[in-house]
Length: 257
Image (cartoon, rainbow, N blue to C red; front, side, top):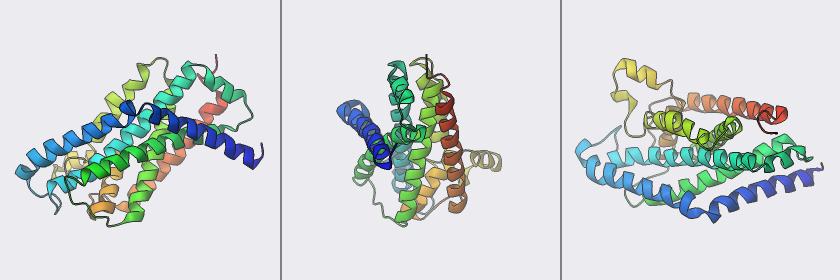
């Protein structure tokens, strides 16, 4: 394929993914908006004043970056896992695999679709957070870089989940029993510095902790983890999952009847 044909193939997959989640916006964009509003009302307006400052800022300001990142994580993952499994279930993915479109174009197209939904939900969450908290932007470059890396990482994770899923129930197992616990234990609602030594050390094994804290550092200038370590860790995960996803496409494991 020529470079122009590859670009057309990528844009076609991306636009299909974007149109898909925009067409069903009451299921893809509205629920996250309602959920994060409830979080801000409960933890910000009701519980926050009783807790007081955390890490040198008000509690509502502390949890706001974590809630935004949590929305991005769950929606990028959910978009790719549901979309690619739907394509696999409907056998349309087989047409992509036998086409001359390179595997990396197919993968990048689906990942870009997940990133687009994550950015859309993140923008909605950010706008809503401004009604409850005063958020500055201490390091815009760090914010943008970590958001993109996190969205790519969980889009790839959703893709891998979709490849191995054998039923629609399988695409909800990882979000329910792995992703949600790791997110809630990733420092969204508290600083890990408040934990006893054992639990603080254990928390540092959670990769989501690094993503949320780096994003919080970009917004508020405070973090429980070294920012450089966080970027290195997320970068390694992105490269590893991208390579593994390409391997799964190349071998067509579980994708062809």
